[in-house]
Length: 184
Image 1 (cartoon, rainbow, N blue to C red):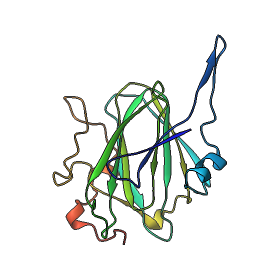
Image 2: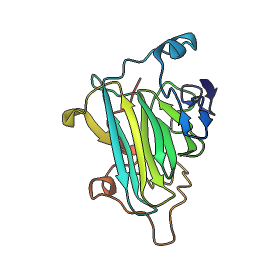
Image 3: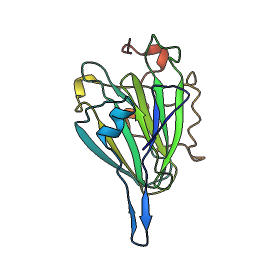
Image 4: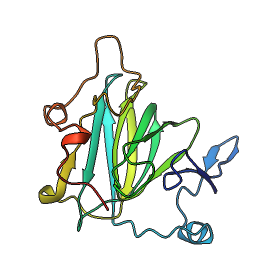
């Protein structure tokens, strides 16, 4: 398993090894002992699976505040996404900055997004399936979001000409400067 830093060191790209032959492939996509050897230890408690039909489906930017903060490990098993993590840690030198990483079934990369970040993605292929592990259960009382199109974030989403397909909820999140909850 390979662990690579991004422009924001707390966010990691994790690439599991793939062993292939004429039958297909085998991959250990998560192995706690490998993570611990790399100095990473997360207690994942739930796996989620999302399917998005149209290209340009945008989900995010979501996060949960403490005490229900969530670290996430995201991977794509079909299709491609542009995965985004925005730093919401006020004491961080990278507060308000983001990391954008393409994840796909082909490149087999995963993105580790720790507590303290808003997370979202846009689909780049039709019929995309995303799996992600989380370290805390979903809590509606702690659920928050950030405006995906906040110009202060400067995210280049790679959406189609007609714009993204969004849930109503994702059209109403506040801009970064208006957030009432962030992280230390």
